[in-house]
Amino acid sequence: MAPESVVEAKPVRSGRSEPPALRLSHRAGEMQASPLRKLAAIAEERKRKGIRVYHLNIGQPDLPTPPVVFETIRALNQKTLSYAPSNGIPEALEAWQKYLTHCGIAVDQKEIIVTAGGSEAIIFAMCAVCDAGDELIVFEPFYTNYNGFATIANVVLRPVPLDIASGFHLPSAGAIERFITKRTRGFLFCNPSNPTGTVYSREEVGTLVSLARQHGLFLLSDEVYREFTYEGTAHSIMSFPEVADQAILLDSTSKRFNVCGARIGALVSHNAEIVQTAFKFGMARLSVATVEQHALVPLLSSPKQFTGPIAAEFRRRRDLVYDKLAEIEGVTYYKPEGAFYIVIGLPVKDSDHFARWLIEEYQHQNETVLLAPAQGFYATPGKGLNEVRLAFMLNGEALERSLVILREALQTYSEKFR
Image (cartoon, rainbow, N blue to C red):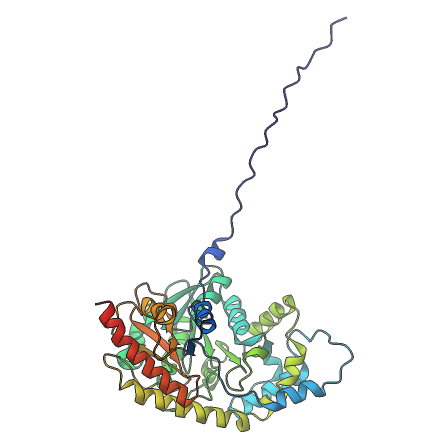
């Protein structure tokens, strides 16, 4: 009988191999920090040391929220705070329809999706019209969070440069058309503009409409500042019936009603496929906050009594800023036609360095200013290096004082860093 084969046992190693290193996504690495908030922690530290900081960096209105918002919340009689429908509660959809009617925009309630602020509306629109790696044309400088939204949606922003000398108005159709590629899916633009305050004329928006029709592109129109129009008229993309199927209106209650923390926005389109797609995205995130939707119904249903005084106050602030900038030597500026922002050129090489020095080291009579360096509002490397965005959120006295500090700081900076 043949002997059984013997298998020799191998010694067990006592050491353990190292696990593979963890790696976050490329998206995580590409996501930019907000240029509006990155110096905020330093500002808070200066405040703790007794320095007063004037915030010109962020678009948070200092005016009170209409009392009816809180009255509506206190009057709510619900035993259970339940999920809202994914497209919005019926009362909010009706209120949004009423609001848009006040603005001369006729839509059905089924063409509206209530979103978590205008931010979610923009992300939904990007994801609805673009596949990974597709492009949207933007006009720089542009709202800095478009960068972050595009990173989340895996969309490429293709910037068309604008010029401070022309008040950041749009170039010719031919100049814009050169930026259209095989991957271009549409235009994303803000009118009135954040960060420039530029109000595009009907002819300018019409140029985008013509290009969109010619090349089969979508028009993503961010219209959250429509009430803040001081010169000319802010023409909605919904006023161009020839692109009804290509137009997507992106909107928000935040600024016009001073309810930034409520986070209630809307995506609106006559294109049923776009709305249905946004509805499905809404199903995936379940719903928008129920209480806030109820709270903003009175504002949306009768908007002008609330928006009129707010817009008038910001017109006064715009005028004050424009007049006082004339007292600062070496500053390049223009008169913003809307919103409550202005991009100005400073007599410095690096506005980011200046803004950091201003909040970290400088003080004038125990006070300083927090600015938003403009590089974060551009996608093209090297653009906006000497520019900052000012948000005129403060009352007139505080605005005037902050511009005096800016003037004195620029003088000290030029002597210190010759």
